[in-house]
Image (cartoon, rainbow, N blue to C red):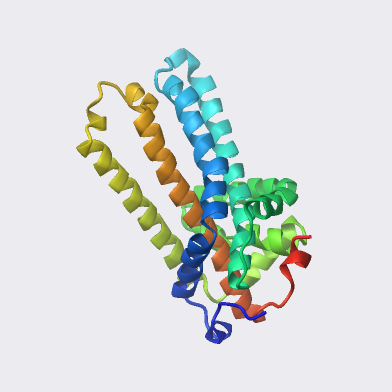
Length: 264
């Protein structure tokens, strides 16, 4: 079956190709992409804000250790969920590239099928990048760029955690400055979307509430942040999956393996 990617992608790698496929995936599979981002990403974050965030904000010094522990644990959980979202949306991205559509159930199954190795990969990736940032920041950025498609590689190729890291190093070699530019662009877009939410909150009077706790518990605030987080998570995850697909086509040529075989 013919893919949507142009034949020129075999000869070059471009940020435009990645973003085009990401937007195409979101537009072609809105229920699967935004639904998964909402259920596995935005909802847990909203629940954290509602039940835990306000409590931590008012914690006294005697409970500082507990607050830090809860915050770290919550961060790890969010990170793991975001990786599961990315794993699930790899399925939707590949389907779009093949001119097909992936169902919500098929995407969730694709993510859950590699949940355990994804968790291991995530923890190792975080430890490595954090260690790199401790060494004057630049090594951490380099490691993140080098391993940026390890998760999609694990989901699709299923060769194990360390093989996924190695595969990501191979795929990103020769395009890391472009990948850095793409990741920086994503950060700017996320910042802009967050800033727009802040402006909306200010103009609507939400920010005039007496305390931060009241703001965090506001239903309108929770709904607004849930929508924003859904958009960010869906776009970020499909972009990472699109990046993997573009790099793989650039290095290996367009793939003809059937999706049913990949995600069997």
